[in-house]
Image (cartoon, rainbow, N blue to C red; front, side, top):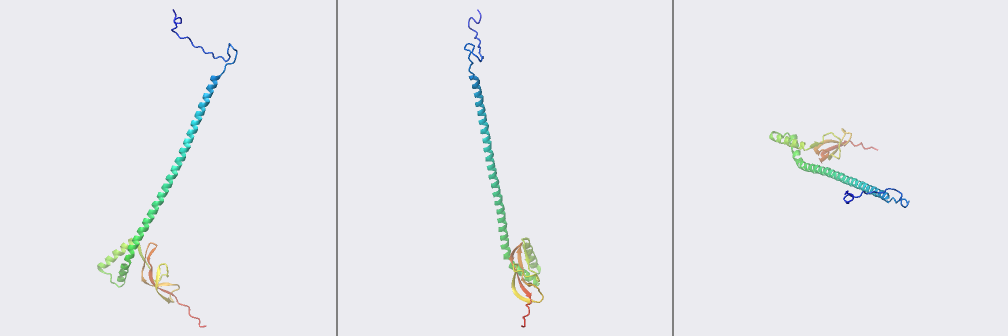
Length: 205
């Protein structure tokens, strides 16, 4: 007995792919093909939607990155300005402190100057005075005021006034007390005697 007769072998599957039905003569429907095309379209739509979502995500990420970068740059600029302001304030405070300390030493320097003018600056006192003047010089203190220089009311204080035929403009003819400055900052103006050109003679008429 063959395997076909005892039913142990499966029957072959035959598919009729003819477009025209041989029994009715009608054109068969092409639904399966259309379904396949629709599936392809849906898959393409899904792919397009996925690509659009990816693009939107990339744009959003780029926007967030630009915002964070701008925030970081603004923070860095604020910190830089803060640091400059702190350094400037620190320099001003230091200058004020040094100026305050040196102002208290000006009477001592005046006494040293008078002792030098009278020939009393000798011995150990001379060494101390030289050390003090050197130390104040290192801190930026400098004396000004010279006999014969033009009178400048911004740095000179006139304590005496006279007329002289020897000058052509208001002139410091005597330095009564030297002035002191730190850099461009005047700690004390120079106290001077000022002479002006002689007054024109009064008209007899």
